[in-house]
Image (cartoon, rainbow, N blue to C red; front, side, top):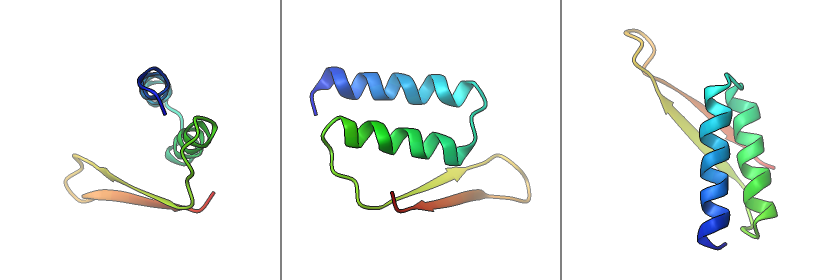
Length: 64
């Protein structure tokens, strides 16, 4: 994957995250774009740190 494609994906992730897209939709969209960019993805996992005083974070596994 070239730098322009990687920058395009990073821009999409940032913009999609700011729209309030759900974590699962964001993860699916990110993986779809990685695969379309030529990066083979078999399995991913994401961990989201939070500032909530009780919940320290969340995790989402995905096998595309």
